[in-house]
Image (cartoon, rainbow, N blue to C red; front, side):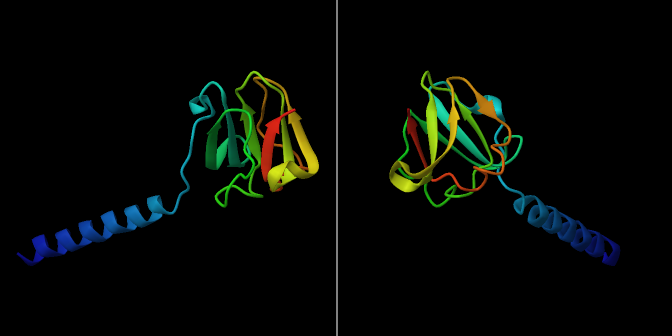
Length: 120
């Protein structure tokens, strides 16, 4: 009985440890999950880490989840999209991305600075 109880406790600890470790990882989205007619942004290079998929060609405010945290992006719309430093399409123009183009890394100038985007 003691061996069975000990085995159960050890198994429970292993499951808990696995859940805690797995829970600490960020959600991932495959770049191919970015729907047509959406602009998709990721927090890490190579389309990894946190992400936001937004329909249409404009987003006045990226939102707290991704504001100043974007490193990779994909424009799946039919328009050229301009990405800006501030909300409301203000501040510096950080990147211009053509229809269907993607960037696995936006580079030092735009990295972790994007706050809004729109067709341009």
